[in-house]
Image: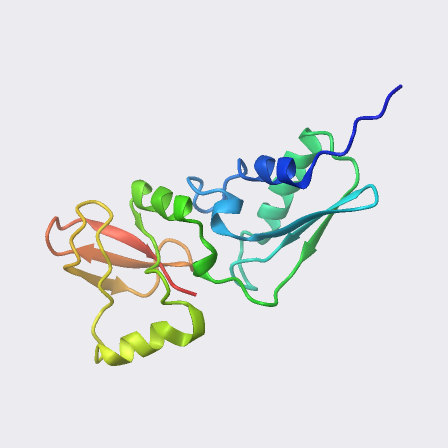
Length: 173
């Protein structure tokens, strides 16, 4: 019986781009930017994953979903490698992922505010004012933070002062 050739790492990444985040199913693991590397170590596929933060409650589910998706594609030998350095940042969310978040009703993180402490510098410049988070429904930046904590630890609760709708903001990390 002929053995099936190893799929390319690009093909494996494509498969992983169809695995949804368990907390925000509209965005894939690759859109989220937590799939750091896909490589072959002889006949073992090694997938390197960086959790959004070390205590993320979805990490075990994400690992199971990765394993299930890859086993369904015929991957026999698989190792999931957790990499926490450098830590994940919202800057790693793809442009497509940001659009998916917005279409789903979640304001994506404001570009560039996560890296190198720029978020805190911006907050300090604004003298404690809220970030200008655009409402994903109407686009207004006349919004206010209701709570630092939203439906998941990665999100904060906001309200739009124009359309009056509540929404989640994906926090910058």
